Image 1 (cartoon, one colour):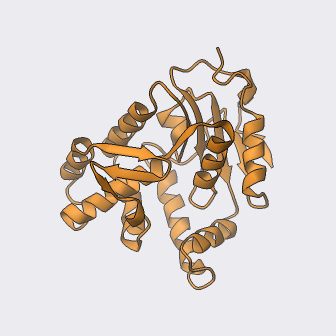
Image 2: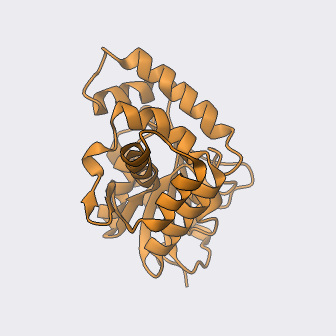
Length: 235
């Protein structure tokens, strides 16, 4: 199912943007990373996950402070670290943090880390610098509303809560055993994300909204590619 948010314009109308971006947003378990990678491969583009960067910052804070640490220290950590983000892979200087990003510790703290406005501002600056001058697929929760509001194409993926929980359980290798707890964790994350003073979870007004509960990754990818201007980025 594909629909447009209220007041939306078709992705084919095209908008001029200094950086050519296809922005994919949505809640946890909606399939953002998998779909972003699929779209990027289909179009021979680079892609990145903003959530991976927030998780990497959280992991680094855990290692440095034993928790989130003081807001000032967390912000300094974000600003003073040389970050490299490619797909869902994140390096802090020469340290590859990718394999550590989905631990239970990180899961429990990434939401409050990402809710700090000054941290979001610093992360957004890093993301914009990363994609400057290129053509990218970017995924997260506020790519089309806050980070790249003039993206050529904006997509918001969603899925039923139980479907998202099952997907996340499979991703964690715990299908069935922890699905109930994961569902509760996702519901709490949704609540926090929708109430953030900056970067709240919501579709952009001109986003294509795709309900992914009963679609395969290929089907979702097909729907996104179908709304990308043939002259991407538009002249």
